[in-house]
Length: 370
Image (cartoon, rainbow, N blue to C red; front, side, top):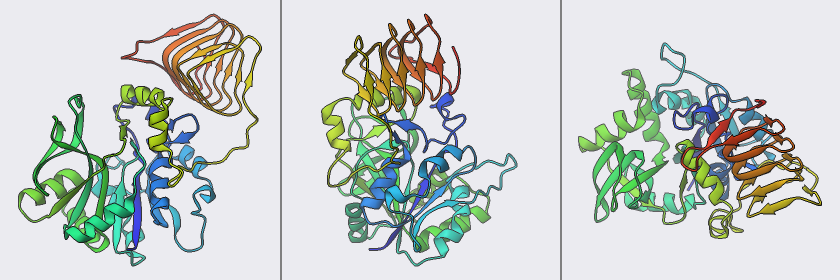
């Protein structure tokens, strides 16, 4: 088995709105010290995939800063390693309209080597998954493409890009932009396909002006009986960050020991950029309850049920509850912040109150001073 990886960095996500206006979905901070790309990138590296391309178009400076030389993933090598793929788009707006256009930019990367398979993946799903098992199933099945899915639950109310019905081991129906019900299967945005077939289909579809992978390729050819589709159901924990509320709830859920144990496994570690920060300082009158706190913070106030990234400062008499506070933010003395997502390098001034709802968290954008 020899496979290459293609990661779609996600230039902008309407559901994540402010959080992805100036960064890619891939570089969105998550879990106190990680970026979302860390999870899929680590899954690929742990599965022996050593040649990985990241497709991006704009707002990718923070992504490049985070990846650096890629040595933390052992991808700074002479052969293989990680490649930021050059932007290309044919639409008049200058932006990608769909994954077919994105993959068209990756054709030189795909054609350069002789990998048998390609693993395609989005970055808005947090999980720890053994991709080798998926490729082995794909090989045995004889399918043209295998799509990684999770079983829908009774509470699956959000629209999913791809939803499937299954009859035994066969896919019996495929739906696009559909709210799945219990017993159906939703895609997590990961696909296994042969490299030669991918190059053939992308070249043909792009030349005819098609650009949507799921609609113009998967659904169309499946409905015509020209594409054999298999699904691999991942029965481990799946966390989908498709919108603000999902991101907020999943971030706070990372404090749960069972969730952490499902995501961070000693046998398949999640790697990220190593930063040498001093330990967090807790003041004499500070109070910290049920929180995830990264290195380099200075806490002198009260923090409850929150996630604090690196170098966050909570001054005396400040109160933080049910919040996601990203790196280098400052909560000044006497401020109250509740049910909020505070983006990087923002400052909440003394005695200010920032209070959102649990179902609609307040967002303070990067670098803002309130």
